[in-house]
Length: 136
Image (cartoon, rainbow, N blue to C red; front, side, top):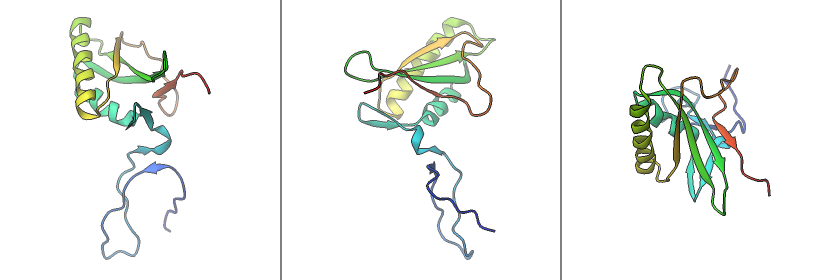
């Protein structure tokens, strides 16, 4: 039986048609309700995750903290360093992460590199976005 998806807010794309009767879908890359609009740029936590995973000094555990200290929103990426990496090289990887986010996504973020086990683990779906902006 075919799977029917209706307004699930999954991000994917339909693959070109083949001889099959049903359209094929590519792998689901994220959800549209996870999107952050930061200074006019749309970004997803999955984009940040890709860049974090490229840094060998950083662990795959991170969270995006969205704040509004003044009139503009700010995004701080809190990421753990690997246990076998010294804090100086992890801090350098954090600076490199700031540059790679700016180059690939086009927005400036702050990066806080924390000690191993410094980010709370969640059961089930990983909680990547923490919105600390005041409600309107």
